Each structure stands twice: as C-alpha cells, then as structure tokens.
Amino acid sequence: MTTAARGRRPGNPDTRSTILTAARAQFAAKGFSGASMRAIAGDAGVDASLLHHYFGTKADLYAASLELPISPDQVLAWSDVPPEQMGEVLARTFFGAWEVPEVRAIMLGILRGGMDGNEDAVRPFREFVTDMVQRRLAASMEGEDAEARALAMAAHLVGIEMVRHVVRVEPFPSMTVDELVDLVAPRLQSYFDG
Amino acid sequence: MTTAARGRRPGNPDTRSTILTAARAQFAAKGFSGASMRAIAGDAGVDASLLHHYFGTKADLYAASLELPISPDQVLAWSDVPPEQMGEVLARTFFGAWEVPEVRAIMLGILRGGMDGNEDAVRPFREFVTDMVQRRLAASMEGEDAEARALAMAAHLVGIEMVRHVVRVEPFPSMTVDELVDLVAPRLQSYFDG
DNA sequence: CCTTGAATTCAACAGGCGTTGAATTGAATG
DNA sequence: CATTCAATTCAACGCCTGTTGAATTCAAGG
Image (cartoon, rainbow over all chains, first blue to last red; front, side):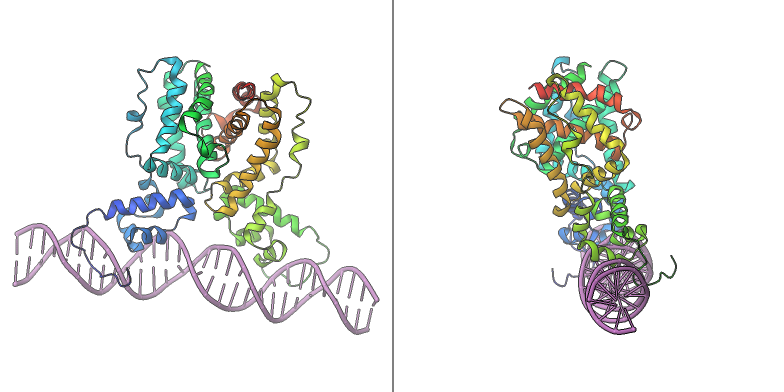
C-alpha cells in the first residue's frame, strides 16, 4: 500500500469489477457529488487515473456502476399473477429486492444520484422509473389514467424506501418486509384497480 | 460589481435575508454538497466570508435557510376537519404548499439535503418528517399501527413531489393540484381509516 | 468631534477535486 | 529472445472548496 510497484501485475483481471464494487458503495453512501474518484480508487486499492482509463469520466463510471445484475423481467414475473394480487406481488418484489445487498447498493446509488441536482446523475433514476412504470406497470393496467396511477405506485414505493433506508425514520427501518407488504400492498392494489 | 467598495454601506439592513434567499435557491437547485458558499455569495452580490460572519459554518447556513416562514400549525388546521375528508385535506394542503415558490424552494432544499449522504444535511428532512408524522398525523389517528400508517402517508406524499419536481417524470409535472389530489387522496384516506 | 463597533471586502491558507499525459512494468505474442 | 501492448502508477495541471484573520469603511453614541 505504501509504495505500490508500478506496471502490469501478474494476473488480476478482476480489477474492473473491484472498481465497480467500490464505486457502487461510494455512490450509495455519499451520492454522485459526494463520492470522489480518489475515494473510490482508494477503496479499490488502485490509482485514481485507472478509473479514467477503464471507464472515462466520473459520470460514465456512475452510469456503469448502476447497471442491474439481473434484468427486471426476471425479477417481476408479471404475466401469471392474478389481478387481485398485483399489489402484494409488486410490493414484495420491490421490498425484497432491496434486501439483497448488491441490489440495495445500486438502488441507493440511483436514488441518491436522482437528487443530486446534476443532470448526468438524474438520468439513471429517470430511466429506472420510466421503465418500471411504462413497460411493467401501465402495460397491464386499464383505464385512461393508467400511467398516472402506475407512476403513483412507483412514487409510493420509492418514497418508502427513501424513508426506510436513507432518512431512516422509525418505524420503517425496523419493520420486516412482510410487515411493509401488509401495510402498503392494499393501497397499491387500489391504484391497480383504478 | 467589478470593484466593490469596501466597508460598511449606508443602510441596507436586509443583506441577511438576501443571503438566505440566495442560499435557498442554491440548495434547492444543487443540494447541500452541490451548492457552494462562493456561488451563494455571488448570487447575493456579497463576499463569501460574509456568510460565515452572519451564519457560521455551511451547515449552519443550510439549517438557517430552511426554516419555514409559517408554522405547520397554521397551514394544517387539523381539528375541525371531518374524519372522512382527512385524506383530501392533507393532499391539498401538501401539494398546495409546494405551489408557493418560497415554500417550494425550502422543500426542495430539505428534500435534496436529505439524500446528500451528509449527516448535517439529513437532519432537517428527518425533523420535518418526524414532526409531520408524530405531531400532526399520528396524533389524530387510531389503531396500534397508527405511526406506521402515518409515516406511509408522508412517504407517499414525499415520493410524489420527488417524482414531480426533482426527477420530473411525466405525467406528474404537467398535472394540476386538483388532478393530483383526486389521484392520491383516496389512498391517503385509506391509510387514515386503517 | 472622537470613539466604538458593526458591516463588508481582501487575501490567503491548506486541501480536495476531476482529469491528463508520460513513464514504467511485465505478460503475451511472434 | 525481441516486440508489442495492456495494466498500472506517478506527477502535475488548473480550479474549486470551506474557512480564517486582518484591513477598511462608515453610521451611530457620547
């Protein structure tokens, strides 16, 4: 760590993913502006210029670090859910995903970046919400205001995870996923029914 | 503006509030980390060290700039609202407040600061939510999980304003307050009824 | 008229920031 | 064995950050 030997090291081809992991952690904890390239590099045990070599600019690294490991399609098996259970399935899927540490880090990064006031940092948030609403929710809903109702569902879920994991106001941080589902699912279902 | 005369100026005792206004705008637009003392000072037409002279540290200025001009008690005349209209009154009051530019700037500052990853910046958000939930909402609700339900209402409202004014996903930014109230109030009412 | 003290700017500090370009190492390729 | 080239570090650039202390101006109080 003190005087690191220069040049190519023998066989560690996972430097790239080490950097990504460190970046996710920093962005999740401090947001886009708050996280620094040097701090990420430090966590990854690597020189800061290596991040630029691999990923380009800071905004590029941010975008690269927030790609979900699994596609939303796999998570949300929408088609074979009875309509009257949509609310519960949606709530359980969303809250459950946040319990997986890798996913939570990415979600927190997206969430914090969305509030950063930097346009580069808002984009992932906007894309996430847009995709979730337009492709997954509104597509299987009926009525003229289906999009607005779907967006309200997304806003509700996001607001809850924000209070639960970022601002941390009790009792949300102490509640289990089951308790949260019982609390929220009926209202999601109500949006679904229109 | 080019070479500002030093020393005390003849009679402008509102410098203090000029600074506060500039601070609110900057914090609302860029968040706590993103806003800089020099940028705020520049907007206020004043040297940066004057901000420290008046308010102390950056966190102090942040806290000072987010004090609501009117107390929540006056806004939300809770006591004489029929129970079955609580959801609508709450939604209209909250969304309506965001339509007042001065209030919106403060709310945005609180919201953005809450996501900043800096503990100083989270405090106003946490206090706002805690006060709103524990003192205004849960106090007039019944049932064992009244606090959780009240917090869910707050999370829902906050999530919606976040999507509407920060991430800006349509159709929320284009909807009127009345349309938003029609959309959200029934679900708030459902939380209220338990 | 003299003194006090608040209001304000200036100049600087020490450190952090994102980014770039050059240098170095060493495994892989021929 | 010589060459190539990706991986990696070093050193620096220019700029911005929050904060401090001293200097200056000027209205008000005695």
